[in-house]
Image 1 (cartoon, one colour):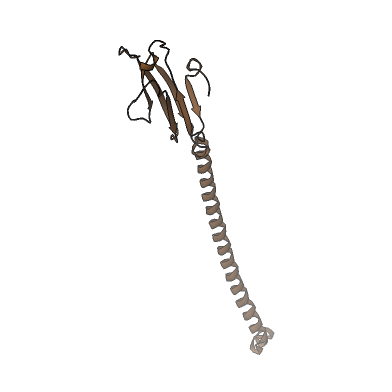
Image 2 (cartoon, one colour; image 1 turned 90 degrees about the vertical axis):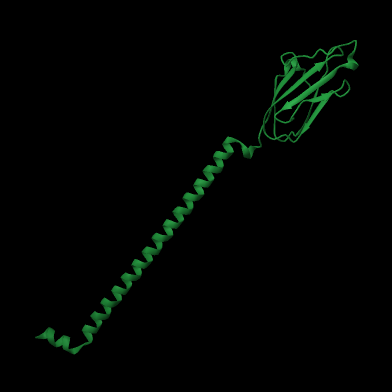
Length: 165
């Protein structure tokens, strides 16, 4: 980022930026080579990391999405150590990828619900079409029987005789 601590209290990193470093120093000019540092990225480092005056860079890669807190404390040659209030504290947030955000979960839920409703509607329409086909088939059978009976009655001579008398 290239900004000094006075200007940066919080950092939000996109998920794709998976390599970043913190570089830190203290202003002690007479014995700067005897200053020891202790830093920790809470939520990632299990315990603080001890570093010498030449090891002033903390590099992290592939952090999972979430909230972290980076803390740096310095100790001089006399053993005086800064407190957490005096030290460097930066809140760090690694944003999740787009497909793991709340609106993406909402989109997945809407797509699933829409798919289930479409499948239900398709099944219902198919069942209605099958019922209609069965009803038409039954009507066709009834119609065929009726026409068969009528033509049979017209062709039988006894029926004609009965009609005349």
